[in-house]
Image (cartoon, rainbow over all chains, first blue to last red):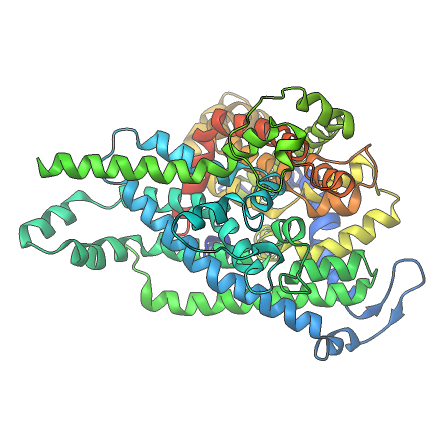
Length: 312
Length: 274
């Protein structure tokens, strides 16, 4: 969530030195006492597993028999594995559609709520509700909404003369159905961030624009969008990272099907590790997922320098 | 006149969009009260033609939903409490106390922030399995109670508290612990609450970890319980959606009670991106 800020502060962590060196030994002792409860747990359950993931990816291991050294063979297996490529493709498809859609919906609703409404907080809360529901629970309702022929979605489409597809059991429409549900589930987050960003734009800028007689589109293009770009950038980065890890709704609504049409990377990792008990291969896949996230985030930070406008 | 028209148009659009957004949640509740035949008819009906509140007890009879909800509270509250307390303590040391290796160690915490949870999933599972922690509360809770994000966010906040506040307490003879408890923690209550609300809701939603660690009703959470419900009872829509309603309502109530912190947390993370 705070990845970008994290990197920023990592370069300037050193705070001013303490003025009283004679306290130093006692202070270090106190410091370690404060840190220890967190540090022990962190080393065992967070940092340790990160290192262990690297080691396990080099093993041939099913948890029940002793592990065997596999070298880089687990990574080499990815190349000819059609399910891996299909999972990668599905995840990319999901990301390429769900992220832009979520951003557009979030931004449109934030702009709508920012039109000087009296009960903004009420609408904001109600629109944020899907974001605060249990994914598994609402996934069931969406299965119901997507029932072929006479489900609610197709009933509404029927009103405007469209014969809706069989959605979750259709080869071509299962993924778009998951995407629509995911946009519904997550747009509230971006909407709240954008609304806060919009409310922070100084009104003088808009007044100046009005005096100059600029059109609403020019005002949006030249004032709102640049002023909102840090928030936009943040939501885009977190949405892409989140959508690369999509799992819950795909497991519940389609179980990866039809065929492997909606099998995502995380679902494939889950199947490899916990249904086929191929822990080494699953660890290798998880590191590849991590690699993709790093690459995409790095690319975004490169673009950021050119496109994002920061105040100072 | 035109501004009035524009205002009405905005309000109208807001109502339409909100109604559309809430439709799935409303439908979940409506179908939950339909009769068996109505909810499983070939042509689904939307408004129940008769109301069946007994579906609530029937859903509880099919699977131990009460137990699952209690387990979810254990899981979510356990991880939240443990993470919030240990993170606040560590964050204070990183923000205020000087010790050799401080920036280096903080760097290690930061380095894990970007790593997706799927990378640690398999080693954490192996570790818990080797320690015989499968289907136990320590096995459920401990691996998810020590992420770096809490330490990072609280340290940022503590750095912003003027040193003078604490110095005053220290001159009155308070030691570091007393200064932390009496000065720092009270000032940080809103941030700690925000962190806690996010962690709690996130863990309430967590499916993958309970799915692999809990394999009996002893630790099964609501998310996994719903999946079991679907597996064992097929698509008996009224009862399935009643179970979904029962597990979602507590979270929705919590959301409305804590939304001040919830919204604050979102904007904090968003504008913190600067």
